[in-house]
Length: 172
Image (cartoon, rainbow, N blue to C red; front, side):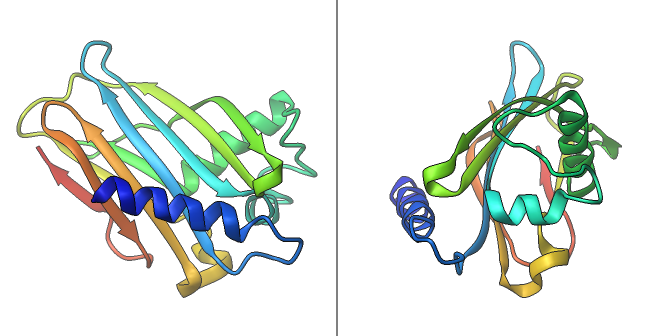
C-alpha cells in the first residue's frame, strides 16, 4: 500500500509539471539510506527545477546551470543543502557531500545525490532529520516527503514535513 502511495505521489508530481504554467504543487521527495557494510549514508532528493533555481540563486550561487554544474555550483548546492537539509547522529551534524545530479527537464525535476561516511550506527543511537527546503519561499504550501532506510533498525519508514517544527527523531 505504501509503495502504491509513493507511486501515485510521483505520478502526480510528474503529471503536474508537464504543463507550461507554473506548477501548483510545492513538494520535495527524498530517500535517505544507510549502508551497514560501508557505514555510508546517502540521500537523494528530488525538487522542482524552477523552485530550486528561485531559492538557490543570489544566495548560494549565481545563475546556476543545472545541466552543467561548475565546481562553484556544486559547492553552492552543498552549502544550500547543508543549510536546509540537516542530518545528525547522536547530536553530531553530518553535512552531506554532493555526488551527482540528474536533470529531468521534461518533468521540471532535478534529482540531487549526496553521501557521507558516518560512524557505525548501532542500537540506542538517534538520527535526527531536519528538512526545511523551500519553507522560506512557500510557507504552508510546501511539503517535504522523506523515506528512510536504516537496516537492520528501519526497513523503510515514511515521513512528511509540512512546517518548520521540530526535526524528525529516529531512536534506534
